[in-house]
Length: 88
Length: 466
Image (cartoon, rainbow over all chains, first blue to last red; front, side):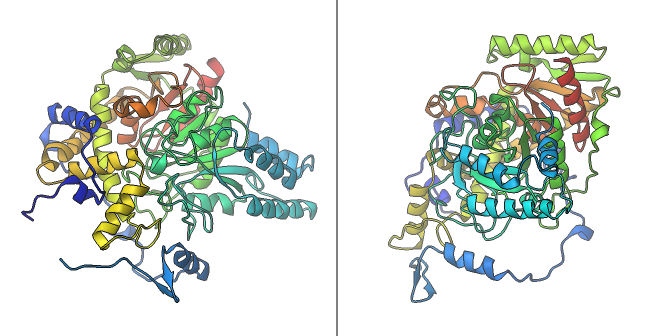
């Protein structure tokens, strides 16, 4: 994507701006000495194929389903109402 | 202090106390919310569960060690049907649809949940002031902070409002409040306890951690919660730590400490003096003590926060008010997301999300994020080398005593830097226990990965000599 996105758009937070305190943390990283040969050596955190859980659908309990519906922010005439989507 | 769990268990079995009265007594202590530790009380459920335990005892049926023992839960854990707010406006009315694995194991063992406990919103903080439920007050001095982010949990344990509590530790959030309130708090090896149902902050360092007043109670609760869980694929199978396995520390021959932690200009003089005196006490027992080199505090803090912010920006992107949360409708979907998140997330949470999105964005990611990952690998390697030289590493928990309520929020950078002694062990995914001895804010005991048993063993040794 060539379009430049500002942090408020990236973060979906209205009027968000970078913080000075956080920028100081980034400066430390920029100036730190890191040996490059360790990048992406994700050797210990991989999960073995044998340990993967079964690819099956697990039915939720009635209580769980009801709580999920109760948590939905808006309902009207038995339907769950989502925000208006506008195609750009 | 001896095990409160064992003591209460014996009293229940011998009918010296009833479980219902025990639970009512604790609820009565929690209800006035004197230290802002309570987000919601689970009183009805707790009393019903207590009655069942009393019935079992009356019928002469045996009960398990944790059966009927009242405990608290940081308000970032899912417990089906309870409010789970993460101390945030966005989730103020959110109810869990399921129960976290670690909590379910405690419930299955018969422990009784009393309270969802106040904390920094989504774990974002080191003082439990970043919360909509009021700043948590320190158990020893209510003008001071309770520590964070699991401040409510630590204070409840310290004040005897709960027998034990379950906190969450991403960069020190169990160990630091345990230190500020002079109790025990364990961050186990990453992956020993399932994170399923713990609201994610930074997934690569998030740990479930027990907080209690004795090493034995930490051991009991740790054993119950540990184990592999298909719902969290970073978990591993671990063996139970036996009670008699942690009583004798004779096999601990060498202890290390990071000399730059002690030489730091930021450390309080009393904490430094007490820490060095602890080192002398350990030497006097015939244990060799080695001074070790380590990364500078600002590198540790910056590496931790850079990676944690990147992860939290990703984890919290789901909080948009579509399926749950306090949605604020606007002209269109994007505006709805933007206003909902802007109005409902705290300033600190927004600061971390924005920082995380900066880290992950094109142009920044190589310079900061990938370099942060490389630094993390170097830190882990440093620990591996150290544990070839020493059995245990000890360090202060915090450079300073707890601040006054209101002071931390004024200076976010100072708050981040106050985590200097805890975040390194999180990046290394190492088992680390805060003990209430050695300095005003306690000591941290760390061992190599998966060696939680050795940590508890050394804690018992320190308890006897300090």
